[in-house]
Picture 1: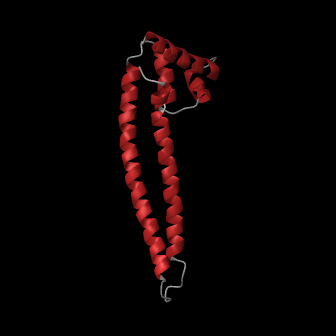
Picture 2: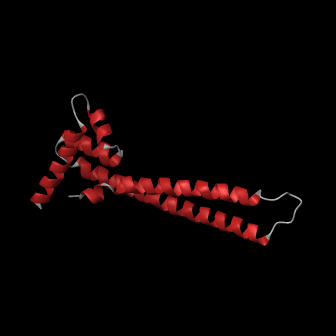
Picture 3: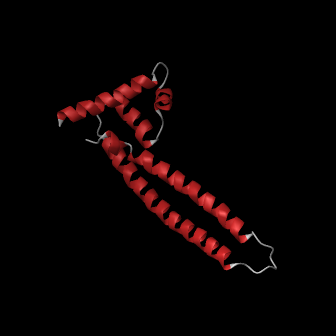
Length: 137
């Protein structure tokens, strides 16, 4: 049995990776501005070099963090896939895969499920299954 929070971890890890990637892009832009801020034949101030070094060090740290989070994503995805594989109902397996492995929102899940299926329906299927599992414990 997994909780909704556990099922959602892959989604939130991927969001964190996106945010860290955006932060790297911001740091890269700052580093480029710091390195090209003066004319080339002018002496560089130690303050500019310190800023550049700090930006580069922070980017390297973030890359290491992103790598660790990607490894954690692989682990979480495999754990989710194993859990989903043991769900008896094919419809529920599809809903869980689309929602928690693929990270789709409820409207996208319903759209992928086919004609006549609404976002409210797939959401109810998910929560009813989780509620049923909780009561069985």
